[in-house]
Picture (tube, rainbow, N blue to C red):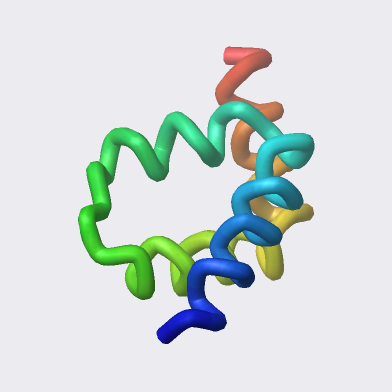
Length: 61
């Protein structure tokens, strides 16, 4: 359980430079559980390219 905190800081720090859109999506979800947030953050990081393309498409439109 203690490791989740160290991982959380790393994931949050690494996800910030990706795109602000991802953080906005996470805030919209308003996830209270840290573990659930970590899982979604990990998925967003793994799907960086897909998310970037999707967000870019939204910005253009």
